Each structure stands twice: as C-alpha cells, then as structure tokens.
Image 1 (spheres, rainbow, N blue to C red):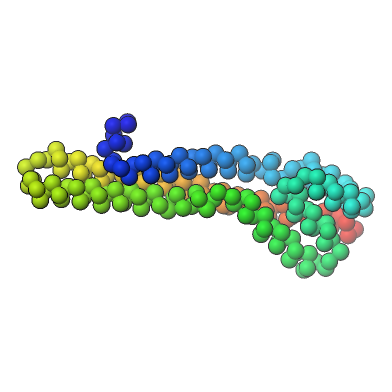
Image 2: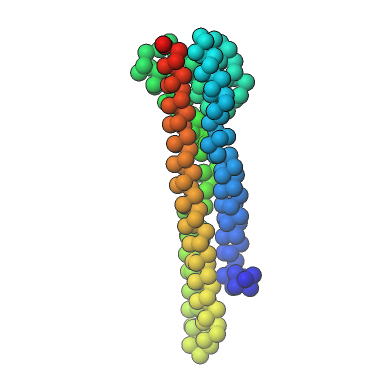
Length: 199
C-alpha cells in the first residue's frame, strides 16, 4: 500500500496531511456535537422547574453555572422574558446565531479540505502528465514502463484527492445541518421556558 501511495509523487504529502486533519476534525465534531452533550435535559428541567416557581434569578444563576450553548441561549431568553413576542424571538435568534459559531467550530477547515483535496489531486495529475510528455519528448514512445509511471502518478493523486474529498464533504454537510438543528431545538426549548413564565 505504501509503495502504491509513494508512486503518487510529492503531492501525496499534502494529501496525507489533509486526510489526517479531516479525520481529526470528524472525530472531534462527532464527540462534541452529540445531542446529549449540547441539549442537557436535566439542566433544562431544573430551569423549567425554577421558572414555574417564579424563581427567575435562580434559573438565571443555574444557566450561568453551566456555560454551554444551551445555558447561554436559555440565559438570554430568561433575561429578556418581559419583552413582547417579536422582540423576544429576535433576541433568541440573535443568541442562536452567535452560538452557531461555537457548534460550527472547525467546520470551515473541514470544508476547505473538501475543496482543496481534489485540486491537489488534479495538480498531481498535471505533474504526472508533464512528466509523461517530457519522457516522450526525450525518449519517444519506446519506453512504456516510464510512460506508465507518469500516468500512474497522475491517476493516483487524482483518485486520492477524490477519496479524501467525497467523505469529507459528506461529513461537512452532516455536521453543518446538525449544528443548525441543535440550535433550533434549543430555541424551541427556550420559548417553552418563557411560556411557563408568562402563565
């Protein structure tokens, strides 16, 4: 396997770095974007109970004690509970937009890897073809093994770039959508907490 990859030429090094970075980001986001980690139902229930008993300051203190995405959005929601429905919706959506950046951490790098991996592969293809044509111009078509080496280099880097880019792009889209869904879920829970306050 190593010999096969080594035939891809020098551009296999940045492609290897891209694959390692992509794998590290996918593992990190998989661990940190778990629904149970982001939406802590036990804390949410405690906040609801405090709000139901009209202990707003205690509910806000609890949110501050757990500085998470959910805690910060709940804190903003409770702090602005006396606003009218439209103003509150705007404040909660603003808080949600700010927290999306927390959930989207490292996804920009993942998207960049998905974009540049095929370009690096294509660059390897160009280098391989240049090498092939250089051999043809120097020695003619009489050395098929040398020609095959250049063509092999061209195809290996292209294939490697695509093998890295396709799953990386799939994970990028998956994590981006999951972050958006989690924020919407937290906003929905926040509105329910406010509804409890306004009863």
